Image (cartoon, rainbow, N blue to C red):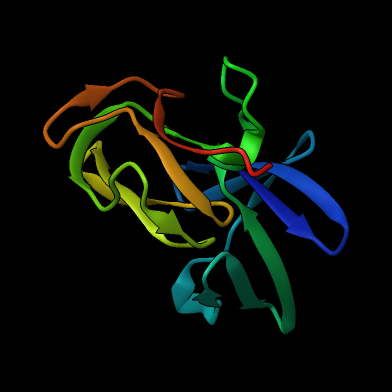
Length: 151
């Protein structure tokens, strides 16, 4: 599974995968074996901030939502469109057209590969378009909710 994390001022693209004996992390061009959680690794999250303590070192990284880096075909700003990070189905829609939302507010709950994910607003705004309905399916990168561009 590909993720984007911000460590300090640097953005890193990483890939997590299951190996035969442990989980693997691809950072740059190098695979790293990850210690199992039973080896003392501790992870705590606060929103998109992730604190990791492993091997006597502590790291704080910022998870970058996949939808924040995608732009709408109509030219809307990248943070105006909440997009599907993977194909799936809509479990619930938390907003309607005209609703005011703040950054981090839930917009849509989706299910993909038996995993439930809440898609959240990446900025403050007003809901302009809700592209999906409960029970509907969608493909990866499909627009789920569009916020009106602020004047």
